Every structure is written in structure tokens, then in C-alpha cells.
Image (cartoon, rainbow, N blue to C red):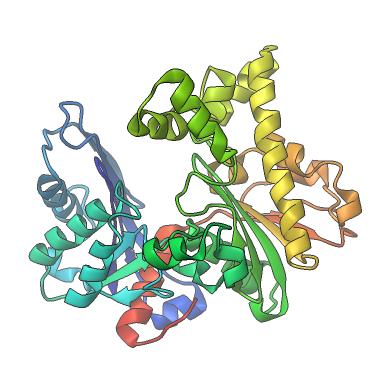
Length: 410
């Protein structure tokens, strides 16, 4: 079965075609046929990138003025005689859509029908920057491929297993009842993939029998406490702004600061929201960049603000690991993923060094020399730490197959 995985943003479309089946999932023999990214939709600088294992890479800058044109470009790329990977779009058997917010409606991935689409629409106000575009992607693809099943895979669904005492804020209970203000959590597909990778490839132990702290560090960052394969807490909250320091997001903040800053600077709600989401985090602290690679280089050149930003970033991750260690009553594993988590041994060391009393003994040589997935703690470390190359598109493809087969599985 060929599954097209689609992630539609406000000005981008990320896509991947994956050949899979229930047997392939069990045996981990899926084939990645091709993947691409269309960026800056609606701008004169729109870019299109596509690559597949056996074909030359494709990069172009055609005019792409809307999402409908972008989806047409996706179909053209997949079937192009030179760079494509299928002869005709009729070879696509199903489409898996990344949907950011499922609210309290969805604790699992589902096949999309009119009722599901309506509930995704109900969540627009919870994720106004994401869900409308995610659903637009479905609407367009449903017109292009009306006779194949479409599945919705939600960033939030994995965290719907959190107990009430973990997801509620200490606001009047009526705020939750009337407006559904609560912790939802995000990056669920990545946290699931890390947990599954430990179970199936790295420790060969049923997820029902272990506890793990999963750490996704990229431009967006989050930590989850996973007990028996179920998320019991996570750092992102009502929105992806809460929790860790991120590339441009501030993370945890005294809410009174928002009111104070709005009064002092006489700025609007929109301006304050933009400040916290686009100009804070590593960028705000360093004044230089939101990119960890650039900040590490600046740190090496003696830039004290770059050093401060990375110290604050690592310290916040460290605090969450410690708190989730306590929440779980002790953990068996810690797992890093995401662009920073997978590729920055310096950040992993800054986070973990000196945590021996929590049972975490970092092996610096392993950490510095790791290529691919693997362990970075000493052989006698009570808590084992692993690095995993996350694959959210693969999770979406797998869930699409399971939805078609009528299998519900986290």
C-alpha cells in the first residue's frame, strides 16, 4: 500500500510517499519512495524540493500562489518521468494527514469523514495557525483523490492519556468546562516514535514494562513522561508555547509578565503573542540566532550571550527531566530526538552532565562519537539514555494503514 503523508502549513506543504502494510509495520520493512517540501507559498520566492532514493534531486522555484497549486505540484513531482516515483496518482492507496489539534475529541488517529472534519473545524480556535491549513489540505486532497481513504493523525492524541490532575490548570474549574482550557501537549507522533523505537529496536522490551522520558529538541521542543506506553505528562500545554525554551518561543513564563509588559510597552494582544512566539527563546536571549549550530559556533568565539542562551536552554531541559523522573517514580530510559536532540552532542552533554545522583551516567566518548541511533550512557548506568532519529511521517503512514484495517494502536 502506498500512503501519501501530507503536512500542510500556512505557507508550506511537506509530503512523503511511503510503501507500507500491516506486515511491513510488524517487520519494519517499509519503503520510503520519495519526500519533498514546498515553501513560501504565495510568495515570488516559493521553492520546491523533492528527493527519492534512486532519482536525481529536484529543486525549482515555480510560481505557487495558493495551496491548490501546491498540491498540484506535489502530484506532478510524484509522477514526473525524470524525478517521480509512480506512474500515475491512481497508485496512491491512501493519504495520511498531520493534524495539529484534536482537542478532547481524539485520543487516536481516525479515518476522516464529515463528522471528523467538523470536529477538526471545532478545534480551529485551539490551533488557529495550524488546523485551518491542515483541514484545507484534506479538502484539496479529497478532491484530487476522492476514492481513497484519508486518515487524520493528531499531534495531541498521544497525550490524551494524561490524568486530570496533570492536564488541568489551577484556574476556576468553570474555565475548563466552558472553554476547554487545559494542557493538551504536542509532538505526540515523535514521542510515540521514540517509545516504539525503544520497544522494538533498542531495548527489546515491551513498552508496558518500562518508563521513559522522551525529549524532542528541535526548533520546537517538548518533553514527555511515558509510563507503560502512555503519556502521563508533557511540557507543552494549552499551546506549544509552554514548557522548554525553544528557537523563538519563550517557554514557561510567569503569566504576570505578560500583563506587565503589555502595560509598560503599551502593546496589543497580537504584538505580545508575536513577541513570545517569534522573538523570544534562543533568539531573544542570544540576540543573534535561533539556530543551535550557529550559537555553538558563536559560543566558541567567546560570545557570552550565545553561551547564556545555550546554558538556559539546557538547564530548562534538565529541570524537566528531573521533574518527570519524580513524576514517574523513577525512569528506566531517557530518549533524545529532533534536530538538536539527534545532532548536538554538546547540548546533550550540557543537559545530562553531573546527573549521576539521578542514575544518569553519561559516557562522553559514546555521546561525542555516536552516529545514528544508539546509547550514550555508561554500561553501568542505572538509567540508560538513547538517541533516536525520529520519523513522524512514518508514524502517520503506519497509523493510516491501521485506521484502514480498523486497528487502534498507540
